Length: 474
Image (cartoon, rainbow, N blue to C red; front, side, top):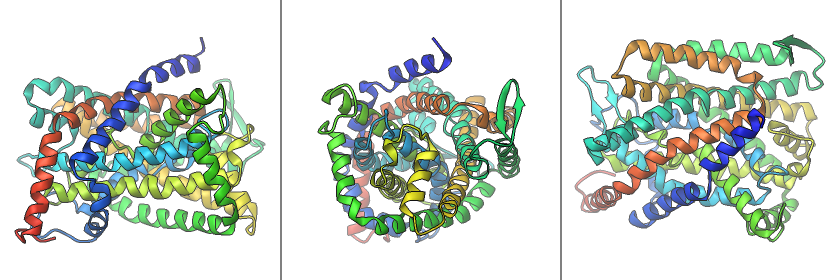
């Protein structure tokens, strides 16, 4: 078996039906236990984004913590991940429907994660906030479960170093840059026996150096960069896709029919109805979780640093991350790809699928202009994801090593090195590795959510009761 085939076998074992059922079940349970919080309190959650809590303790504002989390979630998953999920031979358009299902229940999951992160966080003698799944597993479930917390921290550090944080992001950046500046591969050099475009090499070096300069500054610098870049690029991308959708609105009904039909096997993509549904479900859920990270346990690491005295308040703010990431941005990307038919072209792979959709959908613009907009969005989305996941990985390693500065500095060096080599890995291998570590990381976190669901439900009910009685300000 080849290396790619071995990875696929491992990926299929990790992301089997049991894990998908476990993740969706957790979201369903938390949705019921919190009284469908993602529907009833989404407006309040969006309002909290821009309203500071007076006298709150923490390191960064709630909005800054969300931007840090969004910097780690809004990345190649929104542009490349959607394309790989619904592309020909993958899940087909039906995968987008299962992304929506995963995101809907994932909002309740993300709420619970943000809530637990603040409730069980600790602050050391230097005022350094420590929080995340490893702390709510240890402090919430008890010391006997510390092994599970360490398991999560280990997989979390691996996800950052060899999954979402490095390989997939820089690979997406270099692919987009090369596709724009050197699509024919006319300017190549040979490295270790393989030919690479000069654009790939230069983009990899620039990204690695830029990431290194920001990473050295820690959470304060990462959140400062994220607060500027994430909102700006999200608005630019959303405006571009909204323009595409409006210009091609007549194709929307057919696209929705493709999505629903593919999701339930009405239009099988391969191997019969059942196989079609299972492939769409698996890829949609896996890519949806890759994009919004609900259930992974990553966002709570950033949420723990938020300035707040109310865990429920930060849980609501965290919940908006899944809404923005998947319900808004991934949906726009997916609709564009399906409406333009780019998903069905077997000659397109990864970012090429989305680029093709942009070029066709924004036909009133020069094709190079549409491709440039997408490239810029992808580059900045992916770059901020690199920064956010370095923060997550470092926090995981701090927990594992007892806050060893040597271990953290070693991790930073390895992290930047992984960013540097990412462009030279194959697209399929990169995404498969990321999927594997995502799944392994999710397992300890989901166990904790099930174990602590009573605490989540009780405190959530108490918060809204106090709010209704005027005991706390909204």
